[in-house]
Length: 191
Image (cartoon, rainbow, N blue to C red):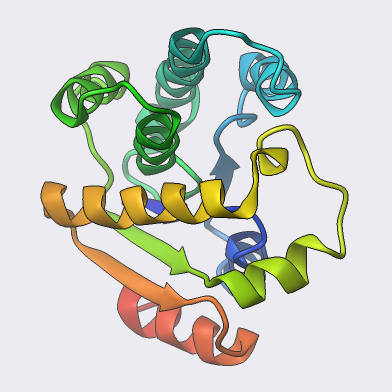
């Protein structure tokens, strides 16, 4: 089973993935970008926000996604794979960046994923107050420096994309307690 944990920075995805991994040792945990050797290099470029072209940024994300699918997701199709981000983030960020068509983005992502979309998606939804509190306590990367309104726009596009694609999903209120969120995820995943 291929499960995406999606959401903007500081929403609590990584914390919940760590909790699941502690309780379910057979989980395969990965991330995009950065889940492969190529992904680590791509992540450095992307987080530096150094590309002038948003199309180049999109294509680098798609290259990472294709490599990640080939190296991590496909060989483990009979196991439970949880990815910290995936194509929903890719679509959300691309739409927030401007001049991209939703259907074209879906088509490009299906190409990168060899037509295999995730089985389930868990989207962590945050709000401005929580986002302000959590980002004030960390050094921001190049993408986060685009601003909190930008990040909330990305989140809105992620949510709308999941609904349009009708992929089984769970929306999580990221301001809930860590334990309440963990229990909601366990219930949803039935593990």
